[in-house]
Image (cartoon, rainbow, N blue to C red; front, side):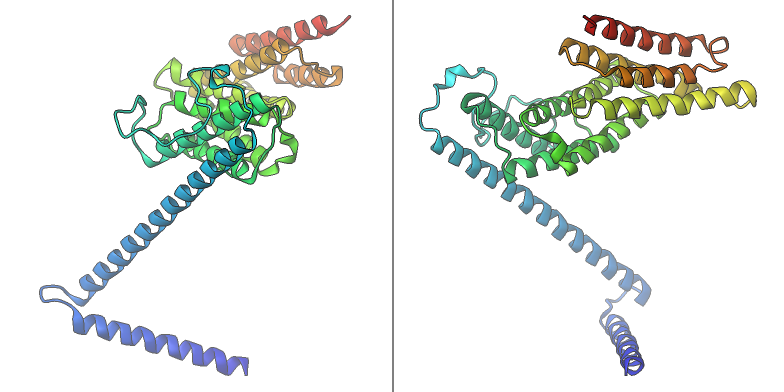
Length: 336
């Protein structure tokens, strides 16, 4: 029975294809071959399909923005006795409002992605301001969706090197982590996974890309540091160490197997070491403790990266020793 049904389906499909082909040939305009006309129809179909997808994405973004507005209005309505607005920093809006129809002060290019990123940042900043006033942090479904969308857009902008200033992305990340500081980030699996993906993407960019300026690399380093939430600290440190270990293996092959050294990575590795420096300094500034076992494991892994490399690659060795020095200083300061 199934065999007969399958044969019937195949016959029907072949018949439909023949009918469409005949219709295309019969309706083709003069001056075009059947093949050219068919290719033109396919191109028009794909274009219309893309337009529908763009409209769907635009509608979804608009719905999210409207839901954000409703959440904010509802939150403000439930807190009728909020302090006056002057208790909040003047440069940060308490509540997200539609952009003025006049001249905007934003210097970022008016692209769809950038506009969405700015709106998400403003919404999350409003949530952050409200939390600081009401002292009742609550991660609503809309806020959670906005967090995920913002992180997805940040990842897209970084991976595709979108024409959006890193400073705008950095502000968005700063606000995202501010909202997450008041939440149990370890329970937000999708958010954490997205952050880890972004950090890995930045690490690869810092290592593999030839940067146009020092400022660009420094911004990327700062981005990773911004993502270093206390609950993500050990995970990001381990990821960064893994990158250093993999490159140390390459240097060892250069020394022992006479492979050609990847000079771009060698010079760029300084950016990766800078991430570790910044992370440890940030941890130290917030007086956060690191377990002695964790510190010992880091030092052990760093020692292994230096095997047979201290003489031929002194810059690499110096960077490793510098990190170990910072670690030992943090440990000594934490001891009674």
